Length: 236
Ligand code: MF3
Ligand code: CO
Image 1 (spheres, rainbow, N blue to C red):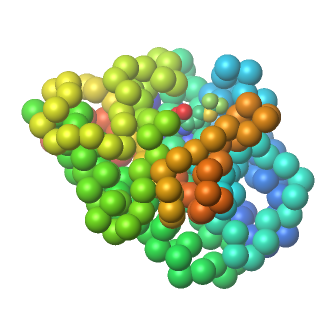
Image 2 (cartoon, rainbow, N blue to C red):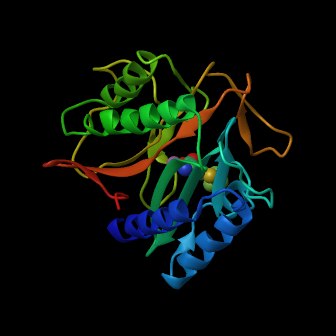
């Protein structure tokens, strides 16, 4: 999993550098799939439940699962990029949200709070804690800063499949849920909205957007629980 996850981390870092006004998400998709091929990794999302791309590109009010297209990105946009690979039968999965050119203070704050909520959650990924400690860490961090947590999509266990038990919600109660043990690997992925938490799926059956048109941000790491604490496998 370390190899799969480090491939994901490197490619996401490359993508982050390519994001600028005028670039298209189609170009990002091509970069991600060709870089995966170079590393003899398979793209985990292409064909998963018939998902048609290798990369999820979700700008602005899109929450997750946005499809790459040829529309140029504009200064002021924010863009969530979610990528996963399979290497040697193991999966890695990670996501980032990046600003395009100059963005509003609101957009910057949303991105920062979402990233920090992921790290607040990762701190709780230690043996003896419970799943609800992770969920509550995200929810408390985000809601105390005036943002809202998406309910309809959640993080997940990951290993020889992209989605394994347990589900990892970004809301819940500390002290509840399964006990965390060394050897478990979780994809923790807060999806955070500027306004209401409500989301809907567009007619393409993939793109998830906020119901109120507000901005949304997403960060994800694949995290192993070890005797020595959390190990972020998708950290660059
Ligand atoms: N990181 C997302 C997830 O874990 C990406 C899945 S996109 C899909 O669910 F197309 F593969 F579904
Ligand atoms: Co995931």
